[in-house]
Image (cartoon, rainbow, N blue to C red; front, top):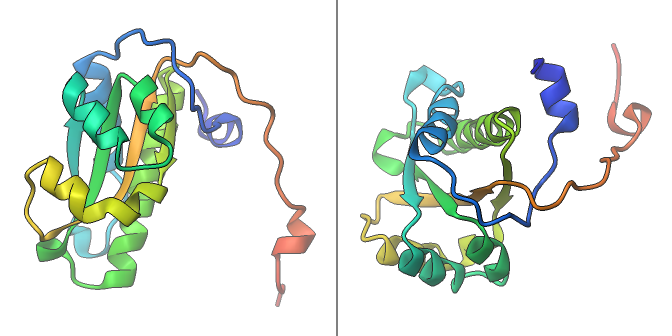
Length: 167
């Protein structure tokens, strides 16, 4: 899949068939995330892969979008390791690039995924559930599965509405 085709064709997928996603597929998505750019190449992202049914249900209970996480065979919690950070803004931007790489990789592999941010209100509870140290700051949870839906064509604002100047 060409890069621009992946960017323009990717959509947030919120419904899944229930068919499993292989460990190799999950690791490929994580690997793609790990290749995002980061300042000083500090690679501050960390991943917790949640495929166990009981843990997935507990994780789902921490967001109002529980139905999405319950329907996805795998969720990947993405954290920023505060010990690896050198600049809050740059490192948070890097994790955003990591998340985008993960979504594009899932799309390129024929999988569906969505980045959930609403669960950040429960960040401490997510860390406790997964028994992770306080130094890991939750950035998002990515639900991954085989698409049961094919979301509508996306739309974007016109570039004239987004470009604030050309000099």
